[in-house]
Amino acid sequence: MAKVKSLFNVEGTLGEVTFYKDQDGYKIRTKNSVSKERIMSDPAYARTRENLSEFANAATSGKMLRRSIVSLMNDAKDNRVTSRLTQVMSKVKNEDLTSARGQRNVATGILTALGKGWLIGFNFNKRAILDSVLQASYTLNPATGEVVIADLIPIQQLEIPEGATHVDFSSGFLNLDFDSGVKDLQLSNLVNLLIDASVSPVTLTPLGVPTGSGQNFYFLKVAFYQEINGVQYPLNNGAFNALQIIDVV
Image (cartoon, rainbow, N blue to C red; front, side):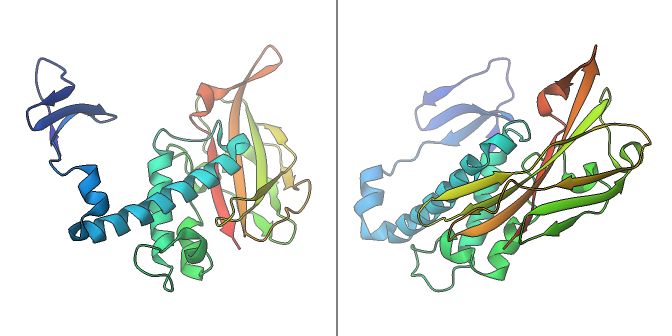
């Protein structure tokens, strides 16, 4: 993809060339001369239609997951989480080894161990990778969704952003059916700690076990705050907050 280096920032179409801007700056692409109507009806574009259908399923599945955890993800995401999750969902879809070409889907791919594996460890904020932010071991009880961090020493076992004085720990237990879109998210208690050398056990217990016939997703979140005059404020609007899928069952 070509980039524009010029005194002028141009957007729009000129002849067969389109100038546009994305997060990496101004770019150029050639105008597609094939109409949408032809792509959707011409037998020569059958493979294209199949690819579009499968991509749409991956994008929709990613949207389902994101919307299922809005309360967790709202302050722990980067500006490319949508496209990054769609890419991962496409890999999950590829693990569907039973559906016909053009009909492979995430709901089938996620039933496999490899399908689940693509999502385990996914970080919703690439600026704050959980395994770097939290340098302490934790355990997960898949039956209850409870997450335990034994004997945490915040000042030693966290990658602490400048200005942070406190840290929140929370978790989520989600059941999501990619076929029907039915979801149930159970959130844990919040554990708020002063960032110091104290030894603090962290136990995060969801309010209940989610119901549903879909897949179980487990999330762990670390969020940083700065206390001023007794009030804790989100640090840099959550830029350093980590949220990860720690398991899928």
